[in-house]
Image (cartoon, rainbow, N blue to C red; front, side, top):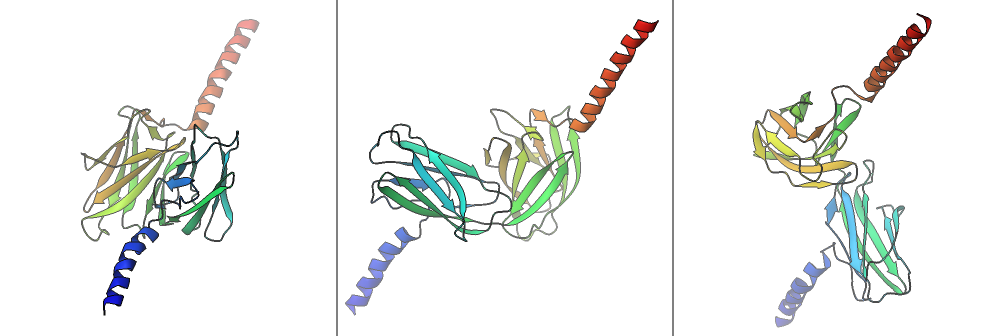
Length: 257
């Protein structure tokens, strides 16, 4: 009877080390990790690590494959000392499932995996752009009217949260920086006029806010220091063209009269 117990004890020690997906096998001396073990479309994946020994000016080669085995992303990364970092943003139409990351440097190689949860996408048009909202499953929140204030630098969106079961619902807001932004700072989030904490990250073009929306909430407000003008670029071009026409006509009038 002691042998089965010892076997179970051994499995209990080994299995936890096998199910952690964010770190690669470092037996080759090449150490690799991702910043998270699971992602959603629009997230930024950061792959970082170190090499055992620098070989000339050779770059680190990184190949990411989707669940079908097709190449999804490729990187040739230069070393900083013996360290490297590569990142990319997951496309909205990416296939959900397990992704494989293969890293090679010289004769050393390593492999790890991460999971992409496709989730459910809702879009809210803001003039000629849009805010994307992702959830892990069907979205229990319905979004309504949008109010933009260039004076207060705010965007307010009404919500119907009667579909929430439980105390709250997770929502990931992917907001283009051309819509609203706070350079070198964070966007302030208010729910029913009460400031709430939403972890934030950013890419070159957008900000990503992970929020838990309480049940019975009526509206969400984003406060920044820059907000999209009340007229879009097309209207701005029309205004500019009108001003140019007035200037030209005034010069012609002065010429002939």
